[in-house]
Amino acid sequence: MNKTHLPQKVCVVCLRPFTWRKKWAACWEQVKYCSAHCRRQRTAKRCDFSVLP
Image (tube, helix red, strand yellow):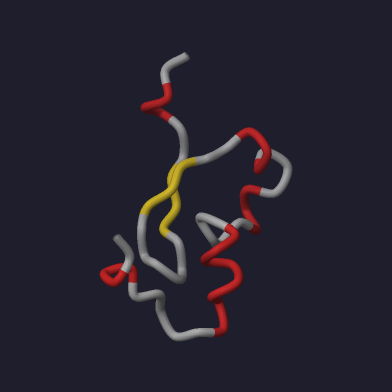
């Protein structure tokens, strides 16, 4: 499977790009966050990932 042509979005919390996943097929238009961590942090300003190891 060639994964280079999958759609991408930018996470509204961490501003990192993330690619389409099969589990998001039915709701790709509504997906805003790259992970559960970012979804939980949505009320915080922005995640400071520079402090993570």
